Length: 150
Image (cartoon, rainbow, N blue to C red; front, side, top):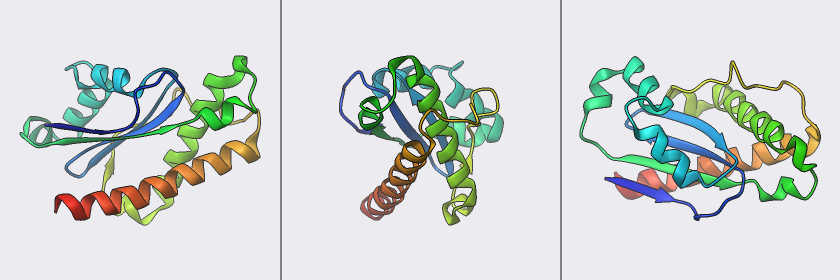
């Protein structure tokens, strides 16, 4: 069963996918729901990375949970030509925040930003702030959510 927590819109998003103790963090310039569909195919990056980490969890008949965060706030401040790069910067910053966080002991991070991390930002202050806000919101929602499904 798939549970989704987002709106269906065509804006840049950062999203989290959780199955058991594995977590994937990604970004998209379009609808997060459409992007998730491609992740669930056998050759999708979530599916491939989950299988590499744990074939057992990959085949386990358990729910997959999705969390999505709209990045429309940055569209006001970022030129459209830099939007994808800025979204990737925010995604990479969230990866770094995850790795420094206590939640890192709860989940195995199965995504990476080695190929896509721009390392610099069009508006570093704003993008770092947005990444921190999203990460804190995710931590709060994940905690509330886990208490509901426990």
